Length: 189
Image (cartoon, rainbow, N blue to C red; front, side, top):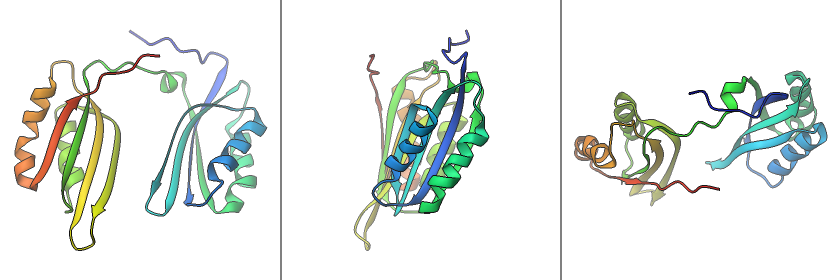
């Protein structure tokens, strides 16, 4: 079943912005979008090391060209040391699609070492688990760094949270990390 979208007369774009962290990045971005008459439909912003990164899904009434968005960002945001990328989206790329299976949170904690992200995400991908969100942080001390990874994922319809937990048991031992899987109860608005 194809999800219903409300995008008929709207042009949608994915806008990615990254640059050295400083106050005002979000305000500068919002100013550009407001000036052009764009609506921010979805967004995510985070700090990665000393860099600030954001991705937004924005819309504007058609006709509206990607070039207008790129030109305004080039004039305003790039002069402030930010890199931008704009991609046009098709209607089916902006429709929210309710996950078919269980939504879960997978947390990984352990001594920092190469391969944690790869091994865990490969195991999940090979089993048809779809990752919606992934965050990592290095905590602890310089002499005893601890790697923390949080994954929001959608399990295939035939997989339970207990089965997902069992499939990661081998990795837990091989990587000497703690891995837990728990159900997330979605909140409806």
